[in-house]
Length: 283
Image (cartoon, rainbow, N blue to C red):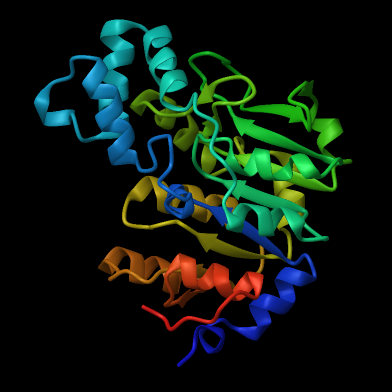
């Protein structure tokens, strides 16, 4: 079966019509030629942090716990400084980022990592802006930061008028170094996320009736599943995820629960179909 036969026509049509919200995970950075210049997985980010700050061995591979230890014993400013250093290199947009940015109808993109690649790809557009999750330890009572196309602080009302909204639920290095990364950051958000408090109103409006397409995402941990579930809430009843790997039982259960159709292609092969490049066979 060719790659084109593995990609549902309904997805391609809905994407062209602006009825699909792309949801990008950190694994999209595997498409950067020569490798991403920033940590491209939670494990890689944990390794970056623990190489630069002493953390107990038993939590060195657990990103949120390692970040919490650094925050507790070295201060939040130290943690933020390390994250700034980790994501200081600008990530060149991949062909996936560029293709998404070229879509004429693009109401909402979710980018669930801290890099700037999707922002850089959107620089060719004008009427767009972003909403980023804010850590409560630094912005108590304010859940979302808004920024316009040039990175200037904006408002929730401004976001209603943007043709494209880039939502980074975990924050991002640019333009204001917002990071949800430590255990305490997530505890604050997860306490409220069931009632949708941390979700920007415009995200709620732009997801209504639309599908989601998950790219570079795995659902093999509870945090990833929780954020995806809550961001998708009250959207369409049909979604897609590019997942060529062997799935865990929790992932299989999550896909069924959320009505997410698995596309068994490598991300590179899927992007080749989207961009009309050479057809390849699925992994």
